[in-house]
Length: 298
Length: 277
Image 1: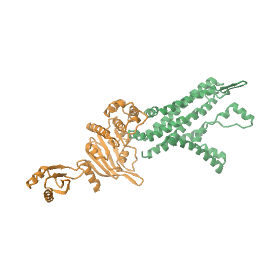
Image 2: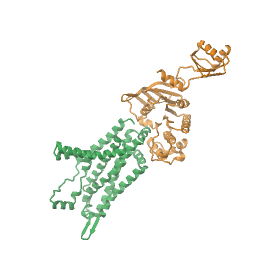
Image 3: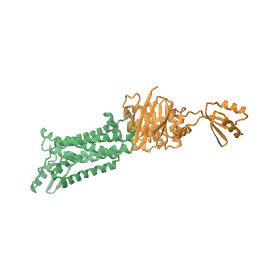
Image 4: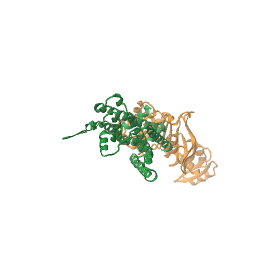
């Protein structure tokens, strides 16, 4: 598989504070990556370093095959970090023309990209007249001008209203659907869960996990069960070696698996023991639950 | 190089304030020709400034380059704000992310400075040439093209001054404060000169030290031309004042200005490189 970005032992110190601590990961072509972490966990700093705006303290990173200077490589990258930054006194078209000059790409793509983000009819309005959602969409259009190998988004829905958030997510999904590699930094877990196939989880500048979303926890999932005689069910499951922790909440019993077990198997077993279930769901932990478990344990 | 200039041109020319300032600057440069129109005709007193010899070759090179250099403040505002605005709009960050290297960023700004200075120099050269051809008492080619070092000095003076503005823009990051700092610096050079002459050395030594200060060295490149005028000389002789000043531009004065220019551009780059944005 083609590697797009390799980060090795990256460290950034701001005085006494270590914002990024010995971080290593790689980004492969074609996947959608999420960088997860609470506020202040070093997500933006990491992106700042690989994007040439923050100086690293130690460690290395290399773009593509590593034979290219960072600023040359960045011409093949599309990135938006934090708030959209454009010249307020220039129109959307003028701003994008400038970006074309910097990235050394022809101006012919401007219309296509502005249409993609739905700003073509506002193309001649000055940037300062835009709403935050429009600014953010213009930033996406600008990042896509060079048809980048990888699109980097840092908190793209931050501060937007529900409609704006929805629009941005639709655009991201559209782009991901075209096979563009995406690196999405966010603290909003459902956002990452919806679009990402791989995650890098950071806490206090340290990597807790990096890999596919499914492999985050060595977990077999859990059952949510409901029946008339909860006491008997509870007793029965506690005696069964396949189950670990069992909790009861609002008339629902949650039983965590210690080994693999199919829902049919459990249903059959309980029926034979004389318990008829009114509710049976087998679930894996949501990203949020997994994330909380991971950040708590370490 | 053309690409870097184009980038900067897009940024400047779409900004209404910059556009107005740049236009008025060049209009003012041309307006020096209006001095020719200064004419008093009050009964027996007839005074026509153009007849006083200020447009005589080669003196006109000295006079015009000195006077027009005052207008450089207009461009100073443009240059300080074109740098400081990149910080306040955070567009410098976006430029770097989009793939401009820090070196290219400084280069595009410095190339703009060079272009401004070059265009100004050509402008002043052309205006002076035309005025001279109209009003000068001497029109021999050898006289017309003597003392052209003032035109060269004008170019280096502007480049040096604008580089200083560029550096202030990066260093201070806010245009208003950077311009304040510029004024502060002018005063500071005078204070250091005063303290040196008053407490530490003789006034002569203090004066020669002062000529190495950044702004003073640029100022010193083209010395004031007024006492060179024959009319002023005559008055000076009548009141018994010795007006035998040295107006020459010396090669080492160029070196001092070039030294500051290189230093300011390098410091701007070093600062940008070191800073986290």
